[in-house]
Image (cartoon, rainbow, N blue to C red; front, side):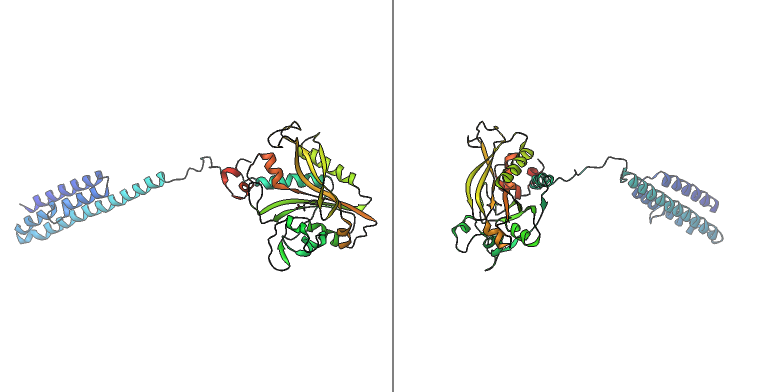
Length: 343
Ligand code: DAH
């Protein structure tokens, strides 16, 4: 082969290689093309044999031509690779882009826990009647939970409440009534408070939970009578359960009130006709109440000759269960999303 022929052949080869590289649309394909021309048994390499047979004076010219062809192909290979990588990157960017115009997946606004919803509504009713919210500790002393409320030591009435005892003197409050005493100690008369909060009793079944919620009410001043209590609770029942809801008082016993009463409202399901929920009585028991026992006033240094008061206590779960038709009190404390989402 003449040197000119060799040069021509190299030109053709490199032009063909450049074309083929331009058509390779995968990195692997480009590598294959490159190897076909520049690899150990590639077409360019084969022409090295032809170079060796040329007369010595032609060899430099032929060598240069070979190097030129090599670098043309290599350059074309590099730039094709760069192109392919760029294309691949563009493709990925396009596939993986976030479409900011898509509507967001909504997570749903949170709602209050069903017990909290009921509690808030009850508090609002009493606030509208002028009661202020007062709070007290959940870890109480025997004095505030029992003694100052006229439960003498060893009095059987203490057994009405299955107490979680912490130490000799500390316990988890079994009711919100201790806040009565704390408020009377801390504030001047007249007093008109409600005290919502958690209470604890060692008890668990369909209608009892070891932790539950009460709202205590207390009104103390001059000339407070049982009819004020009745008026207050009647207004409460009507605002809570609807106009025309009747209430009735049944004589009862609590150490801290005298006289004491259990208060029923007309059944909110059958409106007094009698149904399964009210066991055909037409009435639902929802409250304990009474006139503050003079002993309780005296414990708080209030002159029981001059001042009188009434008190009441209600269970939040009881009302929530009635209104929301929940049969097992423990459902409120399991944090089952499906249950909670219904409210
Ligand atoms: N503390 C009572 C209880 O947990 C409820 C109660 C009844 C509160 C009568 C009162 C009341 O203030 O007058 O069983």
